[in-house]
Length: 477
Image 1 (cartoon, rainbow, N blue to C red):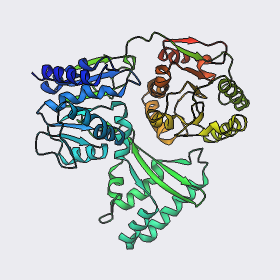
Image 2: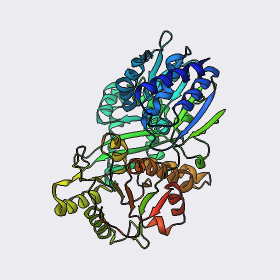
Image 3: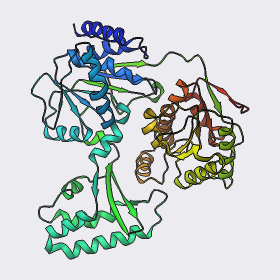
Image 4: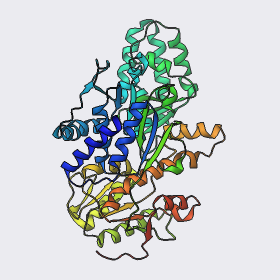
């Protein structure tokens, strides 16, 4: 029986590797083996920031089972799988043959797919009856959204005009009209401007009656309807822009991907979040870490200003100075606003010298890294564990981002609570993932966003951080 064989092999592997750092290896291995044998649809919830060694419990059953299985991997996970996990399996005599490429493997091999390859395999029918294993379930939607995206730059416009000389004048006129409108609008801190459906309608009507179109214009024509949104990435220096089009709900563009086949979906979702990705599995299980003996020290005093207050910059600098002054370990300061982050970095460097840097990947032991939330979430696994994390603002997505604004507008049209159903859960997930390293290092968290104490939803943020203990005074280490 696959479950028993996987259990036996994993025990041998863990015994050889020494004391396991993650306590649920055997449970995960038995559950994955059962799901593969029965072709079940299974959802496994992990604690945010779980030790990455949990992958062993997933890979051992895959090395033993004969079924046709495709695993969806990001570039980072693919590198870890090939360079770290597969050699561990080979050390105990387990061989996991991995097949990479657009076409399915002949037999008996695990098919490794990127998100772009998954889209192509689904559309071509190559995925067929393969079971699907998704070890990074929290990245499924954003990476599929990028895989389905259509990007049009200046070169694509030139190629289109060369392909359709009879319509070159009309195309040039439409491009110039769009350019004038987009470059005249305020583009926000990320240089992005939303493109309304009525603005792209004349181009759609023209291309719909013209002859064969060069790539990516046919895909752009297909990506129509309320389930998609467009925006321009503007470069005001050279007066150029790049056209982006992405789906609001990428799984809706791949109907049936998670149905009618065996699926193992793993990710750090809290149970209170409810249904995940619209997925209704036959088996659900939460493999959270055991209760922490030491609660997370949390510095979030009452009476802090809101991020849009005129004196917030001064408050942020004063508090960061106090927090860094009494800290002998690594400090990470999270600020999403580019201008504010650079000003803060300069001000801290003027006081603390070269130990302060902007998005450093090789900090000093008592260094200070000023970075954005996305940068930290991407790089924290390759950096030393911080002694303290300073959140200038909570990681709530801004409505200045056209994609976020479009997703919010879609929920508003249906009368849904877009903040508590979309923005807040995503922010809590980012927060939990970001503080996982601080918890492991017995460090502390400082939240300098006054909204956490002044808004009713702040209690939800505090619940997501439990267990924690309030720091009322800052003391040097």
